[in-house]
Length: 336
Ligand SMILES: Nc1ncnc2c1ncn2[C@@H]1O[C@H](COP(=O)(O)OP(=O)(O)OP(=O)(O)O)[C@@H](O)[C@H]1O
Image (cartoon, rainbow, N blue to C red; front, side, top):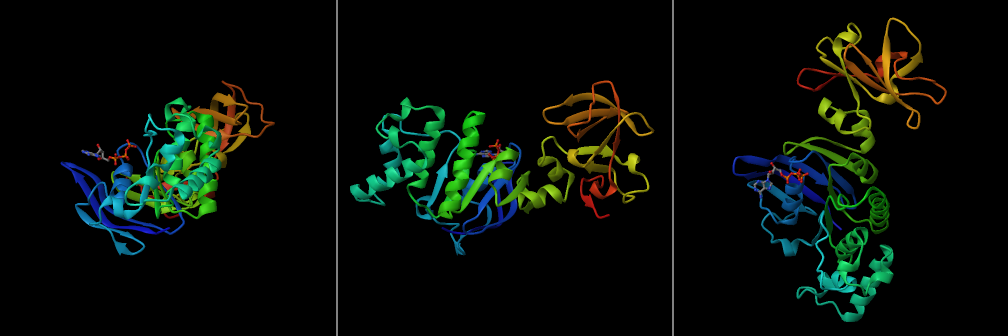
């Protein structure tokens, strides 16, 4: 396994700067997730590490060695794509065995058999090995695609939204399996997603990417609890963090604050009328979530089981100052 570093890496496509002076350090054995919206530069970053793209500026290092000019085949990275690009005319066994049979590897047949069977067992597809790849469900096909990466035991796994084409249940199952496999093998994984649930459950560390730049790096909890910008604060959390007008907090925050944000679980909910009352718009008993409104601003808050609220009823919401995050007009976090 290996560490990966990108140092001052920029990649342009004509007028578009896809990756902009990127600084990234992924440690050996780390599950590192790049999270960001469409067009943020996530796929380009993976392709730069794989060697499919060449940076316009900056260097790519693996285990400290400069690999910027090294061809992809020599980098020993296994790529798993969003679409399971299997060979339809081959069986599951032959699809998984494919990388071991490349002229560069020349693995003996007995070893191929042993490795393919081991990987198939890990992914619970051992009884499908002799089927054609096309005779599988979507979830099974994606397992085969992941198996084809695992069988190689590469230095680094690069995974580009590998679960996004699957239905919710399969995605969850495979997510758990991927994490277990990575823990057991100690593999270095650089994983791209725009799904925050996937990012926070899989990652040892997350980088939030936007416009080709890293906004913040940290463990999921660090990024969730201590976002350095409003953009990052809004990236993690479902329902999303509440953003409230600073006028509601006059005197209790930094004077330069233009936005105040608070997580739904930090809003205190009390029944009844009062000077700070809101109108309930919606409440979900299952999720203990209330949506309330005042002066056109919607606030989401978690309620207790025993709080009987209904649409149209008044509710008192309060925002403990120690749970509020203050941001300036450019969206940067302000110290309190
Ligand atoms: N080969 C290319 N030619 C031209 N522009 C490109 C190319 N590859 C990427 N881009 C542009 O670079 C930017 C970053 O693209 P990239 O695919 O890395 O984003 P992403 O974060 O992976 O997005 P998505 O989640 O939609 O896959 C986008 O504006 C995209 O249109």
